[in-house]
Length: 262
Image (tube, rainbow, N blue to C red; front, side, top):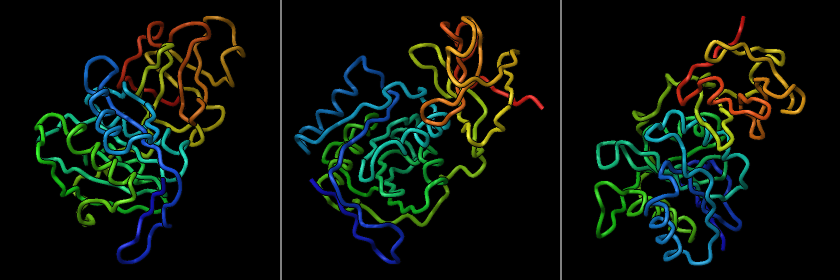
């Protein structure tokens, strides 16, 4: 299967060729029907296309925290990947539905800031308002009825179903380039921030929940029970405790601020 973007107007992106996959980034969780129904649409519309679960537990109803996760993890995937992204507390309301092409990857989802950091960090971007509507559109499940079919269209090599965007009213210029707060807690209790480690001084110390944390390369570099921060496998500042749970032992939650020690 091949995917190609035929530029309209001045060329800003390279043509997008190659085998496609669809990557799911949602706050739906794996319990309940939502992820399964969205996958069912994809299997019906593009049978045989790989569908990869990246995050099913993005911060619930929190496009801002999710935006930093998406930007950090999307770059790991190859060009022509299609990201089907649904963290959408305003579903059915006035927020736009958009398709974004950024550095030869596709993103489909709500225009609520979820793509802000992807768009800001990309060398080349173009975006479209989704104007296509299905025969039946639930007011509360655009992931299944709108975004999944549009992702399937792109996977079949079709053009984005809508007009190029000219209005950036839904952008979030006031969001920082690096967010010094907790944006995700993983299965092990490690706490990811929205800050890129490469943007921090190598010997930086952070304060989280009143604890001063020094940098380590990996868990086993420190005694058992020691809290620290490190650069995780996707480049984010992450807080951990060797053989412990940073969330419980430090009292961390989504939104907990993290400060650099002067």
